[in-house]
Image 1 (cartoon, one colour):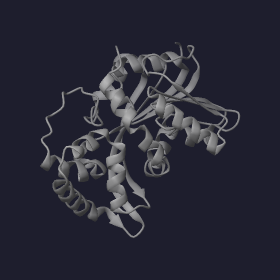
Image 2 (image 1 turned 45 degrees about the horizontal axis):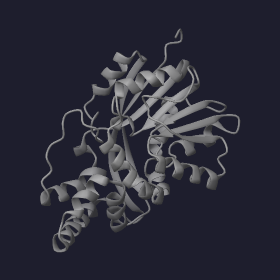
Image 3 (image 1 turned 180 degrees about the vertical axis):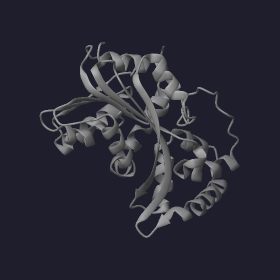
Length: 282
């Protein structure tokens, strides 16, 4: 399947902002990275694949876990994201992390290369998630593990809805097609699990992870961060005249205020973690 050019364009425009906010994003989603590492049984000396790595996460966090005798490969279809990941790796001295431009359904690696493969909020945007899962199984070693994180329902995640609901009151937002590449494509329990079974993943499982998204930033800074990293929200905001934009910001900050603490922002969050492995006889 050909890559969705619209999705590629959206993420290309967002790449500079993901690099700008990389450390805060890393902090906010550290519990997800930890869950993926644990469920994929990432360990020292392993060779691990991070799909849709963006500006280098969770790959760079996991590079410390696999250690100098291990190796992390991060792939992303957006050249600007990969360039940002390489800059971050150089800055951090992560010599065991390597980043390449590649699509999940056409991986530039030999069969049986990786001990584990993970993806944090990436598989929802793959043009064909089924083809990608099969390709991931190809490059996993026999009995190698995979773990994917996807968002649960939007209404369970104020990280998303606290701002999007305000903007949608001011701008009409037509509903998406059921399988459109979107953050909540696999929010329904069982939907992605069914694809894992269809692709031939062994011992495929799904679990709900409830955690807290925290960051030492103000609600004003969070408002700007969300607009920066979301092409969809930036696009909607750009259509508003200045007086209406000021009203949207006022309403958004009011909505966000309940998630403000003396230490910064704090959101309850829910995601699904999908895990499985490659058959040992493959």
